[in-house]
Length: 69
Image (tube, rainbow, N blue to C red; front, side, top):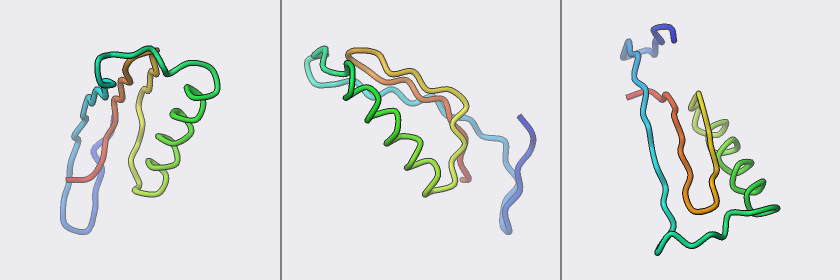
């Protein structure tokens, strides 16, 4: 990853976020999995995040991303 610049900062920050469903229910399957994936990419586009890796499992989501401080 390269060093990124904004008008007020120079950064190279990467974050690993995990979203786990309540009671780890297995509901992220089929069309719901595709919808969650599309939703994450839409949010990243709207807020200028860079999704490095995204994995949607049946009971949780791992997102490795970079965004300005």
